[in-house]
Length: 132
Image (cartoon, rainbow, N blue to C red; front, side, top):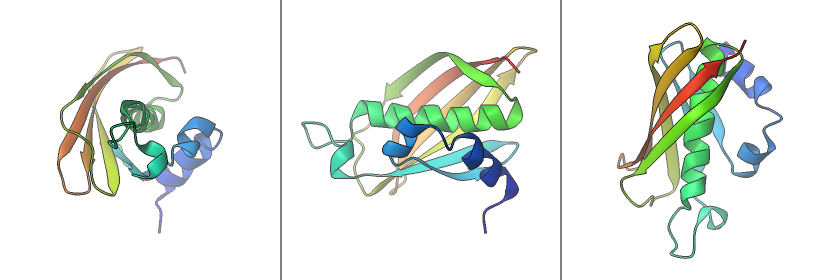
């Protein structure tokens, strides 16, 4: 059974049509972290038959947004940087976001993207502006 935090965030992000089209699913939300996932399908592959970098970024960005908006409604991205470490292979990707710093109007997050075999695919740092 999904917890209340997951249900609230699914409701909040229900109109994020791009993330939905990419197949991003909100899996877990706590006050310490958020986890989202996405299946690797033909639609997520680039010309080299590896997961498109934009797909990985979308998964990481939504995961950051889920945690940020759970902790500090309404938070928007100020800056994001991603490092792609390994080719994304397997059947599914997972992203886990944690908040590493917070001030009155800004928060910094680290998002780690792994595949279903535990291989780290990418790490993203995102700065959020807390507007709400």
